[in-house]
Length: 129
Image 1 (cartoon, rainbow, N blue to C red):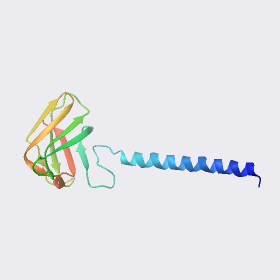
Image 2 (cartoon, rainbow, N blue to C red):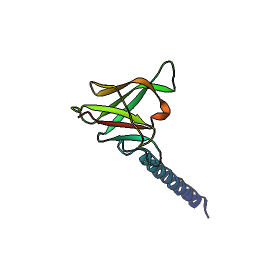
Image 3 (cartoon, rainbow, N blue to C red):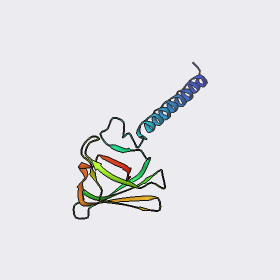
Image 4 (cartoon, rainbow, N blue to C red):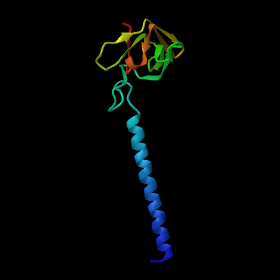
C-alpha cells in the first residue's frame, strides 16, 4: 500500500470518527432537553404543567441552605394567573406556594415555611382559576 493511500484512509477514518462523535453528541443533547410538562426521561424529577415552564430558579434559605423559600420561573403565556407547588414525587402530596406574583415575564412564588430541597423533585405550575 502506498503512502498516499494510507493517508487517504487515515483522513477518511478521522472524518468518519468525527461524524460518529457529532451524531452521538447530538443524540445525547436531544435526550437531555426535556419537555417541561413530562419531566426528564428516566429520572424521577421534572415539571408538571399545562404551560411551558422555563428558567426555573429556587431561592435557598440563608440560614438553612438545604431548604428554599421561593421559586422563580417563566411560562409561555403572558395573561395567565398561576400558582406553583412542589412534591417529592410526581403523584405525591403537593406543597403549594402561599403567594405568586408576576414581575414583567418572571413569576415568583413564595412559601411561608422553608421547604426541604429533597421534597422538591417535582414542580407543579397550574392556573389559579
